[in-house]
Amino acid sequence: MEGFARGLPKAELHVHIEGTLEADLLLELAARHGLSLPYRTPADVRAAYRFTDLASFLGLYYRNLEVLRDEDDFRRLTLAYLARAADDGVRHAEVFFDPQSHTARGVPLGAVIEGIWEGLAEGEGLHGMSTRLIMCFLRDRDVGEAERTLTEALAYRGLLAGVGLDSAERGHPPGAFAGVFARARAEGLATVAHAGEEGPAEYVREALDELHIQRVDHGVRAADDPELVARLRRERVPLTMCPLSNVKLGVVSRLEEHPLKRLLDAGLIVTVNSDDPAYFGGYLVDNFVAAQEALGLRRRDLVRLARNSFEAALLDEEERRGYLAEVDAFAARRGVAV
Ligand code: HPA
Ligand code: ZN
Image (cartoon, rainbow, N blue to C red; front, side):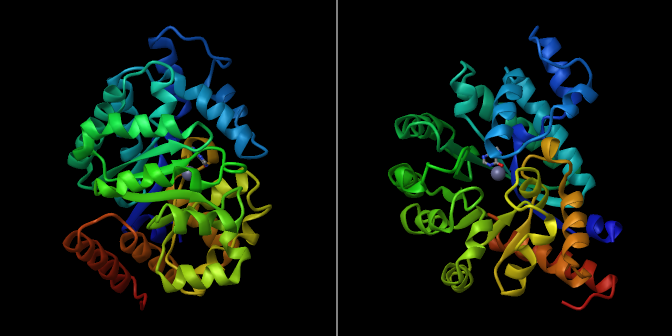
């Protein structure tokens, strides 16, 4: 099954580039910039990766990303992620980044965006894949800062495909960002938001109604609300779900309890993604395999998840058709009817 999941052409739609910072690059960049870290070896780093909830993870995530200082750091981080993604059969990757986590400590926005962009362009060429960049606002910081970040980022409008919303969810309902998202939409940017990860189903509804998002990141808690599930199906709003992340952060107590399969069977556009793979114990294939084992997914379910990933992607229709044809050809070769 792992070989099947790996060979299957897939899009990854929910991955934070800062969350792909592996222990070896973390230590190397700290040394390069003369920064001291509370770890000496990659094993020390990984031993610290025990989380009880989103807050305990975010504390470490924001601390570690401080080793990212210049354009070349962002370029290398991005290239390393795309190499791993390509190994996992990812044909198209949509990458999140958190600009405020860098600008707030004095790293220029241009170094962040241009560094990631160079990594994406180089990785596309090396691995024959396509990519998009999505800029996320931090919902636990004030809206004015998000507004200023958007204004500044519009100087790089051509490098951005969309905007998103992430960081600590509980107590930070999405509606506060309605104005920023309206401006982003007016600029022709796609809009997505984390909702229903640690926050309730109501935050998913609010993100749909007030931010007019076209995709929900996580959306686990939406499963608690039958009326919302019916709406997500009717309006064909995709969910970018992250099974290993949800177990590590206690969003579900066991993978067996994850609503992914139930929502997939209910006809929602469910996708599987890795979120912060350096922290949560696996890249995209690991997430597919873990979900497959815990939820009893069949090969045709994996094919459906792969098709959904391209249906939900920010691709033009010709690119989309091409990728869907790749999935269908793979399924046909393996004798899986779709
Ligand atoms: N949830 C919310 N915000 C985040 C995450 C996450 O898993 N990773 C990075 N920012
Ligand atoms: Zn996320």
